[in-house]
Length: 340
Length: 294
Image 1 (cartoon, each protein chain N blue to C red):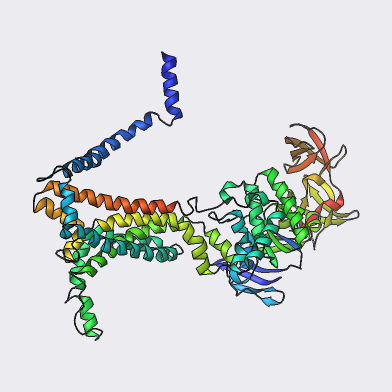
Image 2: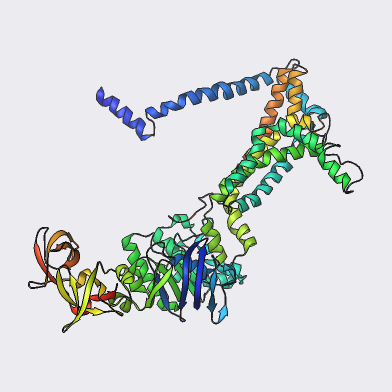
């Protein structure tokens, strides 16, 4: 599966610009980005629900972007599930096989297998309206995989579920993917979901792919400041930078820190630090006073203000309260410096 | 005592009755005065014929072909007109749903409703008449040898029922069509269903309950056809519909009792057909035409 410089315009608006992506057989790729970044547009282009206005899409070296959605043979899970409300679970799941004119016994057997896979055998004769959100989600997945598609597309499938069910279904999707090994493109705005599910992640911002990499790469080393911001590097500020004896020197909250350059860094730079990489130490270089401390069970999420007025976000194992004076430090490897 | 009042009020509230409920009283009185009372009055009147026993009016109606045949004549006009209107509305509504400038088109289509049947009938008389535009154009291009007859017969009434009835069925159908989640069609398409299959397997089953209601309402409109049956039809023959007979009984023979009986029979036929239509709804799916929490 390969996307070659795929673009999509709506009038004068470029919803998608030059998206190139290769999905290997059996790979699980997540399209991650803030809402409105074009990730759903990209998925709809792959599914054939939207025409591309530039570029090409190939499946096994065969060009498919001119085919209609009904000729691509993909499986798709929609955000609102889009189950047919007038059909039983069994007929919903079997729909893709019926349109392929498969013989009845085969349909029955494969529907039963798919329902067993999502553990819904007992609900097979109910209507979708009689099922819970999580069960409807399972039906949607079964319906998408029953045809044995070369590619499964999922459009924010977990966003309508509550937090607990979302974790359950996440594990379920991972389990089904491991069992079937079908290539999957998964659209989400939730970085945790993307990190935990995907083999590779493509981060999209403003209709453009900004980084493609493994979850580890994206988490530890975003390629640019925009991606860093989206990946949870909440401490993000402009700073002058200079190369000193100890390495690249930047200024954070009025103090000097040693950082690691990502790309060609000039005299002006952007510094990015994750809240969990900013540590509370007795003799850290940054002095700040705590403004808000939120208890998160395992630790505290703290907002503090440095001496020069910079807002800093960090996490603390110890109890801190508003008004406390704290000193902070970060390891040089975890202070990422980007060209401004 | 105060406690008893409280509990009464609370009991009422639990059944969804509170002081706001009182606001329906004017509407109830209105319906009673203008619908229920005349209906009951007419029903009783129909059993007090000028001559003969209490069923004499009905016996008379069903013994004279001149009278009872009007039911058949009216059905022969109303049923095809209703079905045609609904069958035309569905594809048009499906297409209009995708359009961005829906409002202009709906406005154009609503105009015939606001004009009223008499105005439409007048217009059709000149337009479709032997010396009207249509026939002159057809003659000019040599498509016909002599003017085709489209007025003062069955087709005139039929055409007028389509023109005045279509906007009504179309608007109703459009509201049912737009109620269907477009995601369902997309899902069906991704699963390999082509346009024809998507229509028969997804859209039509979800539309069916709405279409039953549209058919019922459109049928009532068509069955009570009166002005166009006189103006555009042949009121002495092929378009002698039942409302004409009721009118003649009341205002030409001054037999209000017979007229009431005919009106009651009209109501009975309509009730029969509507009941059949709405009962058939239970044979198909009746849930919401969307899925999930979306």
